[in-house]
Structures are given as structure tokens and as C-alpha cells.
View 1 (tube, chains in turn cyan, purple):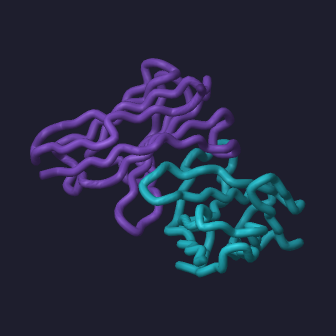
View 2: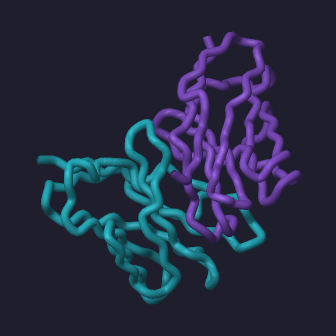
Length: 111
Length: 113
């Protein structure tokens, strides 16, 4: 069963911020939220992850709500190369390696 | 450069034939994974291995087999028992298992004729 819920698709204007929501209402206290993206016909690429605090790296920012039931991935200045499928996943416990990816959000950045 | 190498990138086979997909990593990762992806779908876990000489079934293991004789290698065999083998297959590895970042290969696209 998918542990996260994401919109199927969204469009974004080039140069604007893209805000990708993810719902993970059943997340446990020791589970991390991970984001990956997959450009067409390539392997997924890690973007960012977090537990409780907001995180930022050179690719994106991750905002996690205080109750940890949802999060938002922010691409600050979307480019055409950011067009991809974005996956939000919750990592299982350290003894459970069955890491599943749902269908993700197809993000299309338009010029 | 360190990374995961999958081969072949494209593969065609006739019905009833077994085929083996290669996955090699030089990242010194303990855990390795095989996923299947169908058009417009997410990734489904086929098999995973936490350490050498150990592997476990994922969500859709029927019709597939794996081995983990070396830390660097985790080949996947698609057997004739797999009813719908045409798909995109992705191999991944991680240093700490599911709580660590997954590194993916570029995938192998299998088409059954």
C-alpha cells in the first residue's frame, strides 16, 4: 500500500517556484520523507530528505509540517530541465527494506 | 567514477526464453534492489538484498530470480514463468538500507516479442 499521496500532475512556469505537495498522514516518528525525481527513461535521482526540520540543498527545499503528516518540495526557480516525475516516499524502519514508489507527480515546466 | 551500471540497456527476447539483466556497483554499498516500472506507473520492488549471499522477495517476485554472490553484483533473471515481462527494470543500491539514499542505474528495457 502506498504510504504517500501526491497529485497526478502539475504545470509550472519557467523561472517560477514549483511547490509539490505530498501527504503522508500515517508516517511514524522514526520514518524519513524522501524525494526523488525521474526524467523520462532514466533512473530516479535523489533530491532531498528530512525527518522533522525543513531542509535545503542546491536542488530544492523540503518543508515538513509540524505534525509531519504532509510536506512540500520546493523547486525555487524551475527550469525546463526540471520537467520530470517527482516521487515522495516514506522510508520504512531500518528492518524493513521494502521501499515502494507510487506513481508520483508529473511536473511539466513550460516556457 | 563511482556508480551503478546496468546492462544491457535494451534487450529483446522471444517468449519462453530466460534472460539475465546485469547490475554492478562500485560504491561499496551493502544493500541492492531491483525494481520494475511499467508505462505511467511507479516503481515496484522485485527483490532486494541486504548483504552478500542474502536476498528477499519484494512485492512482485514471481517469475524472477536473483543471486548475490559478490557485494558488487546483483543480477536479475527474468524467467519464462513471468507472464508479462516487457517492462523497464531498474537496479539500485544504498549504503544503509532503506534509510539511506538510493542510487539508481540507468535501467534496462526488456521487450518480449
